[in-house]
Length: 500
Image 1 (spheres, rainbow, N blue to C red):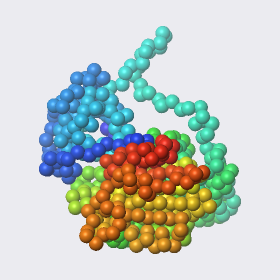
Image 2: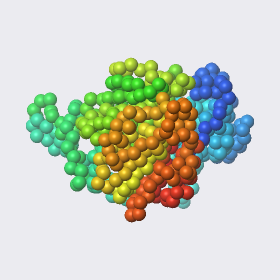
Image 3: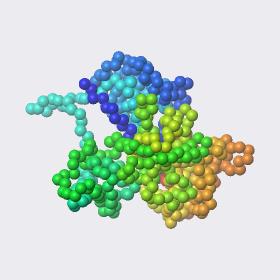
Image 4: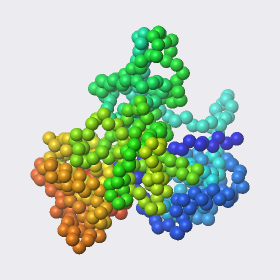
C-alpha cells in the first residue's frame, strides 16, 4: 500500500520572502470567470475523476512520468509524489506556462523557487496519481540487490554545530540546558516545544508546564527551568516527543503550527484590518524584523495557508513598545473575493487560528553600517517596512536618515497615514512621502507611478554615505523599481526585494 502523506509541508518561503534583487517571483495571470480558488475547491470535490485512473494509486517510473508532458496530459512530481495537473491548468494563478515548465519531470525545484509555501498536498489531493518508484541500488558482489529510500546526507559542519542538551535537578526544580555551540540571537529563540535558531533548527521536545527560560546569548546557553509539582528526585525527564533532539535545516522540516487566539481586530482603513493574535500560554516567540509567519485555516474541508509579515502595534509608539509583548500584529487587506482573508475577517474575539514560527531569508546584517535607508512600498507591501522603520529609528547613531516612498491608488488607501506623519514630525531622521496613481483633485502630493525622475528627487546619496534600499509590492512594481534603483547606482548588495 502506498503511504500517502497527510501532513502539509509548506516550506520556509512566502510571497514576502527576500528574493534576489532582480527577481520578484512569478506574475499572476487573469483567470477565466469561474476559475477562482473556491471554484477549484468545488470542482476538485465534485467527484470527477481528475487523475484518469478511476481512484487507483500507482507507482510511477521515471519513464512513465516523462510520457505525460503535454498541455492535454500533464503530470509532474513534487517531493516524490506524482500529480496529474491537467485539470488544474486553467485554475493556476501563475498561468499555464508556469505549470508546463514542470511537465513530465520532477518539478520540486521549480515549485520551491516560486511558491514553496503553497499547500500543494491539499490543493492537488484529488489529482494524486501515486508515488515515484524508487530505483534499485547497484548490486555489489556478495550482497543482495534491494530498493531503498535515499538517506539525506549530513554535512560535517552541521555535525560539528549540532547542539547538545543536558539536565539536572534539585528537590523542587528541574533544569534543561541546551548548549548551542554558537552565540544565540535572542529573537530567533522559540520556546514551547521547539528551540530554533537561524537556518538550522534544533528541537528539544519534552512536555513541560509553564517553565522559565534563561539565556546566556553570548556563550550560546539556553536554560529551561521547571518547578516540580511535588518534592522528590526524578529518575528521568520522561518520554520524549516526536523530533526530540533533532537538528535539521529548517527548509527540510515542516513548520510547526501553534493554535493562537484572536484578541482583537482593529480597522486600519476601508479594507484593511490589524489583527492581534495571542500565542498559547507558555510560548515565547519573537518574529525577527523582515520575517513572516504562515497562517493556516481549514475552509470548506480544504487546508489553506497564507504568509503574512508581522507589524508593530502602533507606529507612533513603535520605539516604546514593550519587549514583553509577544502578541503578533498582522495588517491584512480583506479582498471581496479572497477566500482566506474573508475567513479571517469572519473570526471573532476568542476564535483560534493556526500560526507558524518565523520563516524567510531576510537578515538585518546588511544594515549594520548603513547610514541612509530607503524604503519603497506599494499597498500592503508596507508591512515589512513598518518594523524596518522601527529598527532604523532605534539605531539613529548609525542610520542617520530613513526615507519611505509609499505608493497607493487613492488617498483613503494609505495605511497608517496619521501615524507615519506623526512619526516624521517627531523624528528628524525619518521622512515619508506618498504617491497616488488615482488622486482626487484636492491632492497636492506626488502623483503617478514610480519612475526615474521621482527616484532622483527622493534619493540622496551624500559623499561617504552607505545606502541601502528595500522594495515591496506587486511583482510588476518591484521589478520596475529595482531596475530604476540600479540605474541610480545601487548595486546588488545595496538592494533587497521582498516578494509581494
